[in-house]
Length: 224
Image (cartoon, rainbow, N blue to C red; front, side, top):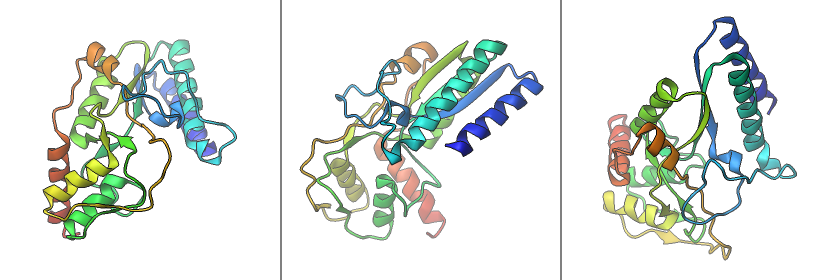
């Protein structure tokens, strides 16, 4: 938390020093907290927040604090501040050995290993390709007016089990195996991106299937 807040403060000090007219802050959907909502996704007006008594909330709480600093900076200086609340993405350089389900699935696909799930696979996520992400961020930086927050990500929801099936199909693997059933209500972590679509004319160009193929092919060329 200290690192993010101090770093953002220094960036804003620099923005003042160079009289920056535009600023883009990459925030996160974590600012909404972990509360499951319906399949329409989190909207920018959602009033939930991370639980301050949960250790894992540090990232989301820090991002909220940084958003406040950026908003205050924009209002005080007249700088056009865009806040991108980023969700989940896929593409070259995504880690294949960390806590990213799609990265781990693609790793197994590349190496021809059957995918195993550590839960029942009913959690709902969505994934935007890195090229679309870049287009959205540049557009927000150059076209957004005033101080606005926009969700950034895919609105095409998929369960983790269906994601594993898709990766398996693309790599000609056996059906994935769901182990250790969770027995809990599925978590839903997807954005409602209607604001970015309506105000900035943004849309996704690359499907999830093509995103997986492009990412796999990139890693195969790296001999990983």
